[in-house]
Length: 355
Image 1 (cartoon, rainbow, N blue to C red):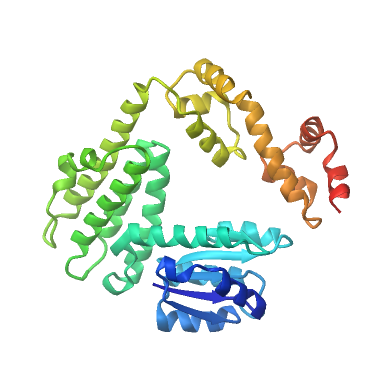
Image 2: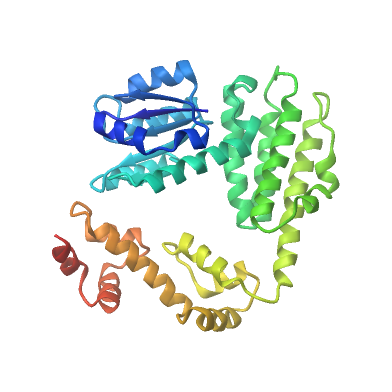
């Protein structure tokens, strides 16, 4: 597996080289570049699997590089490394679909976790990322819809997911002269991804493969609508099965509830929303959460928001209004009241204390 480090500071590139556990992770080729343009030249020639890039660089910066990678190399995993002062870059990295964002000074554990995640995703997707076996425009289209479908899959949004599958089916039909085996490859890879995602949600591989939709033999002559509808049906079947499992589950997994809130605390989240996600009544969720954690659901969400706010306040270049919005508050006065209630000081006072 190949990786490239793109950063205009030698000490930063050297740190990444020293801190990465390359041999254990199976990365046996590592290149370096001082800016985005020279990095792109190496990428075009060597086709690395992972790009590790800074955001602030001379010439082509990280934002421009990420945009170019999304257009021409959507299969590449992108890890951004930058400093606290680059808050605007952090937001842009998210918009540009960076896979991970690591702050300097680099923590070796965070770096290697990001690399492990990138490798795992590359391996899970298998042939979907193979530039050599798939037209670039087709690859870009499939990757775009795969990401959308997985979002709706994990939200259990059946209608939106079915709509995306139908759109993908229609767009695939517009491609001509596809390489032999493309249909078979796409079918197998979507099914492989389904097995992996179902396992994450607690389903056995045997349960997934028992669905007749997963047993279709697809070749170049199989109509697109036949194998695409089979994929869609298999994904829907897994969602129905998981919903049924959760409906009849007697005990709430409070750790799973906490993980859900850890990922959604900046959203407009309500007790009813969380209860629906775990197929329990809001009263049962509230009571069980309090018994096992000693905290209410809403207090837990506020705690996570305040932890993130304190982290962002360390950067003097980030306006307090921006901090409030970043943790889910559009009313600045309300944010001030909540922050002082939880921490005992106002955001401005805490920033002064930090400085």
